[in-house]
Image (cartoon, rainbow, N blue to C red):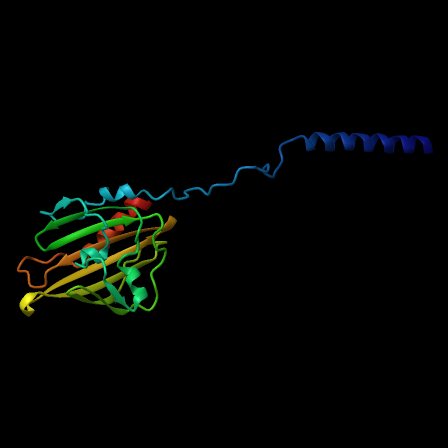
Length: 226
């Protein structure tokens, strides 16, 4: 009787082990480890600066698109040449956030003003400087008073907006004024996109829509950064 009991127990244990082994060979509930890094679904691709050429659908009727000059940046669109200075100094990064980096973009002129769209990088500024709610810019015969204004909201992208009034004094003391609005988005991978709208306050032409710069910037960001 005792021998039968031990034999029966051994037999039962044997078949339990066999069953466990078969189960262990089945499909596991846990994914196998991978040597390749996981890529999140819908992860953004690289920034495509050339995509700025596609961001023109928001231009007003009658605007003619042209190429940018070399060393294109908001500060040059405002009428300043090399040698300008900002006060406070660090605020100057707002008008040349892509200094020394490759630039893609376009200009468009028509009744009401001139519009510039630019993408600079890689190697551009990654965030706007602090403490620049009101500052000034000077160079040659031109001075500008710059004021921070509400920036457009673009999901996941830091933005900044500025309004500037530049005054140029020519021979004889005659002064001319220019108004500029610049909106800038700091993109991933050290790229920066900006749209600048330059107008003549004394022009008799019909003015551009007040939201033209933020609207075009949203198009530029969508075209180059998805």
